[in-house]
Structure formats: C-alpha cells, structure tokens
Image 1 (spheres, rainbow, N blue to C red):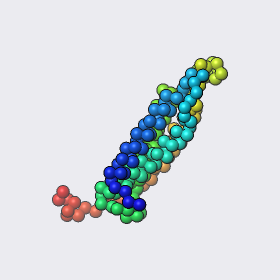
Image 2: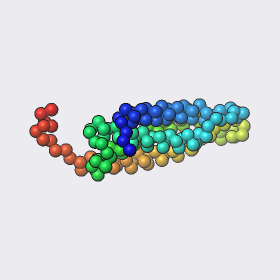
Image 3: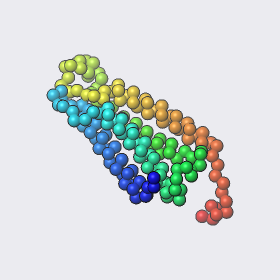
Image 4: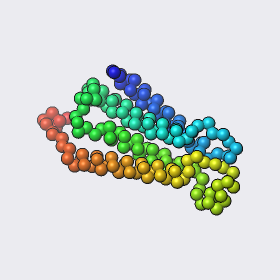
Length: 167
C-alpha cells in the first residue's frame, strides 16, 4: 500500500494528539472522589497509548524513508536501527509521563496505609505501586534498546567519499 508523506505526517500528528489526550484523561480520572463514576478504562487507555506509540514510531520511520528517497521499508539495510531509535524515544516519553502520574496523580501510599483504603474520600485505579511497576518495565525496555544502540554504534562505520567531504 502506498502512502504519501502528507498522509503519514497527518497520521503521526493524529497519534500524537490522541496520546496526549489519553494521558490527560488518565491524569484527570485516576484519583477521583469515591462517588465519581469514571468515563474510561484507564488501564485500557494506557495499553492504547503504548500501541499508538509503536504506530507513531513506524509513521516517523516511513516519513524519514520518504525524505531519504526510499520508497519501501524492504529497501532499508538489514542492519538499520532507525525504528529502534524512534521507539526508544516513545518509551522514554512513556516513562516521563508515568513518573508524572506517580508523583502528581496517585494517592500517597503512606496516607493510604495510615488511614486505610476504605477510609479515604478518594479512589484510584492506577496505584503508586502499579505505576512504579510500569516504570520498571519501561526502564528494562529502555536499557535493552540502549544496549542495542550502543552495540550498533560501536560497530557501525561511515565511509566518507570526496562528495561528502566537499559539503
């Protein structure tokens, strides 16, 4: 299937907009008064954010290919790691958002322990511990991709020719 650069850019921008929208919903609806009925499944929104991040990384890769005159992903070299670079950026963004969620939009675990969960006037879906576990997951994925990129960069070479040095 052929895609125009314009369409890929619109897709990327739409994904970015939806990712931001979903994070904002999570921030607003995670800690709410006990009698409030949530409008969204926050864990499902988080899963969709992760999925959209992968799609956004791919849209960025395809746009880059078009900008470089590459018409098909099959034409990229086998040792190409550009998707990993874009995906690493996505994972780092998720980690930052999770850290903000944990810091600003969860109930303090000490408060919950001292008062008791049932005695609080607020409830939460994504708890401090749940968010911390997701941050640890992100750290593991980020570390794995960083290692892969370091290994690539240690072995990758660029051959300067006369045209490249003239620029």
